[in-house]
Image 1 (cartoon, rainbow, N blue to C red):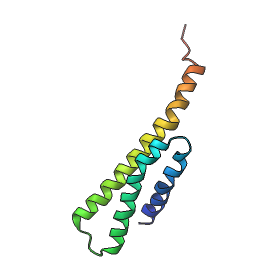
Image 2 (cartoon, helix red, strand yellow; image 1 turned 120 degrees about the vertical axis):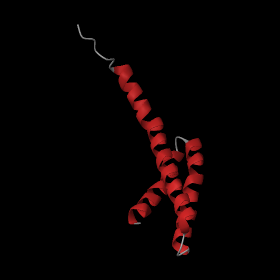
Image 3 (spheres, rainbow, N blue to C red; image 1 turned 45 degrees about the horizontal axis):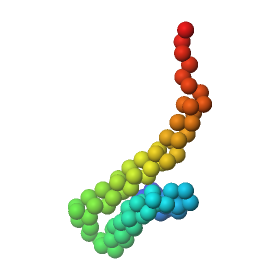
Length: 94
């Protein structure tokens, strides 16, 4: 559970980092973070969560994880790779 807490804090800070340059992505990401916090509080408050509660918690975790990685690739890696491809085109073998 400690790894989940660390990830929860990182996920909470992600919209703050995105806000300066990509407000739309930060707004889209905020409901994921809010749902993670609500499900975490429910997990702590209710001693017996049940199978549905665990499915919802892990589904939110995986959805947030995928969204964060897709956003990172789209926002940061893709422009970098595009600029590298334009600067240094692939050499041809003669």
